[in-house]
Amino acid sequence: MAVSAYVLINCQGGMVEEVARRILEGRHVKTADTLFGDYDLVAYLEVEEMLDTFSVRRLDEIVTKEIARIKGVVSTNTHIVTTSRDLRELRRRLLGEVDRGKERPRRET
Image 1 (cartoon, one colour):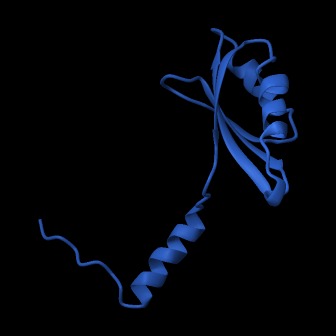
Image 2 (image 1 turned 30 degrees about the horizontal axis):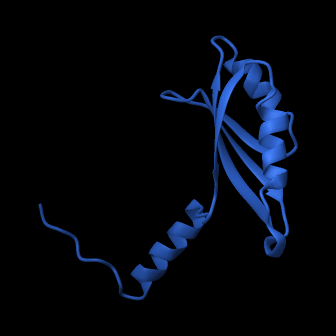
Image 3 (image 1 turned 90 degrees about the vertical axis):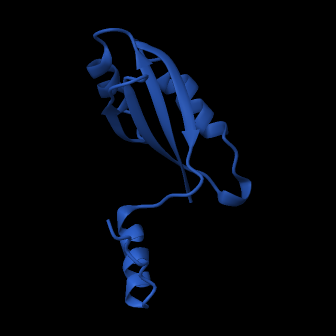
């Protein structure tokens, strides 16, 4: 089972595109998106780990040895995903509740 994480990244001025390109070269990085706000990029990673022997060792290696060492990366902030919810799952759950007559009453405005 894969362990997923989001890595928020601050870059040196003018280096965002180069850092994003380099980050995407990593085989565990699935996306690297540019942001407005406190961080310049967010990278989404998936790392194969055995759930019963989970450790963050491999994730730590990827962030500290591959991402943080890229020229132009100033800092990283890593967030491990604990529960993944995709849009299809949310729609299925919502539609399943509506189909079973569990629709919430709408508030009148």
